[in-house]
Length: 312
Image (cartoon, one colour):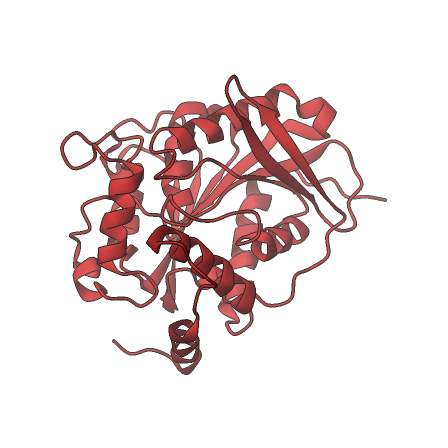
């Protein structure tokens, strides 16, 4: 495994990160992700506005943030639903704040970030249901939110890529496009890339096995395709899709296999392979130029499908 100097610098830094006063291994994972993203994301861009709302449900509410892009005041805005990663057990507004700000400004679209329920407190299908319910709520309230319900796409990274894939099979008729960033598609962790990168960088097999057990306890015996999207057979509602794959990522092979399944189902799929990159590289803008490259590529893809109004 040949790693570039910037990646080696990042991995050395990651080894030094310590979570503050973790209560247990789960708390440690969550705090570690927050610390990592805070230190490596780089400077946060300013946006026009960030709105925090709660989507009401029968027994709980789903927190969301709407990021309004800088320089855009048009009400009838295109929008991107963003589903965050974190092995289904971690991730929050703060871990993805810098990335989402950048995407909002670059794409010129409002980005709707869903703070879905996490495992193990809320195993599958809680998080998936939160995301689907939020999409439906956004569609139903599009006018009051200043969103054009006919100009919406979805982006998911890592575990969020798995969720986005499943969301699209359920409500994909509302989406103009889909972007999956190094998606976690398979709970078996038995691909060649998992054998190569079993102990990292960034992810490790032991942690992945535990995360899948927490997220989908029945997955080893009776896996649900909506939890394990590599098993999905029917992509009937899935829109045109862009997949970003990182070379030195244990999830590389399952991401490529998922893309092939979509192609076999007749879904237009574009794969972008990021040589030398590791899992989670989108959070490493402090060091990596490829973050800007990836954001630009995603922006170009979104603009193929969204009509972005030009202000005069």
